Length: 296
Image 1 (cartoon, rainbow, N blue to C red):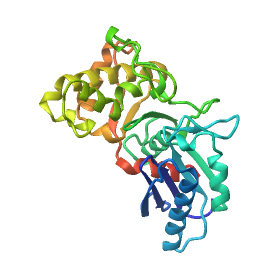
Image 2 (cartoon, rainbow, N blue to C red):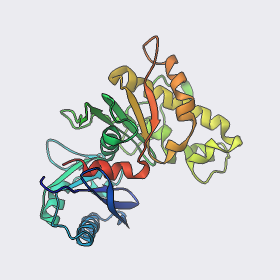
Image 3 (cartoon, rainbow, N blue to C red):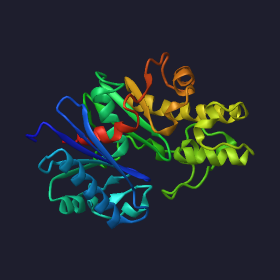
């Protein structure tokens, strides 16, 4: 790519964001639009219009596009799969966007994009092994080693949200059904939607999952959530042993993730010490779109 600019798009369940970065990684311009819910063709057109808007305002020729998506492309069929925005599943999204925009397009899971962004010039810059997690409406993960994304032969590296809750207690078996077709996935225990449902079951009134961090009535709920998160992350440490775990998503503001989880990991990780750092994503909501721009 000869241009000093990089263009990225973050396709979310409620919004689509585009960002233009210069050669130093500084954000030159951004634009957002609501995601057409359940409308695949409308989603293609919304991305096209957003990209054209960014390029027109900056007086740029068409740039290669990186895009972060929920789910991933099947390496066998090239079709989208595993997206909680289910209208994307089964479609050749990369090919369709390349056709609609008449340019090269690269897709990566949104958690991969967050991890790439934070490992490049964010909270985990300079670390050799970085595992990034998204704690939000869904639960996702990505892995970067020595500055490069690790996808794996099945293109599912980092998908920790759909492994079962480790070391489950009797009342946690079999767990709630997950959209993936199984039950008891980490996403059904840790996501914002799951936490809000758990609060309702306890008769607690919260507007959003992060309220449990400040509402004294939610102390038991918060303790349970942190305990489950620690168990989930302990498996990541045992398998990947990252230098840094960087946390994004709407629930990443919960202070206990950073104050409590590091010491809790010692009960579960198969080691005498645990020195893995757990840090909040530096670029916040922009981590995904910044990482998408770095796919080229």
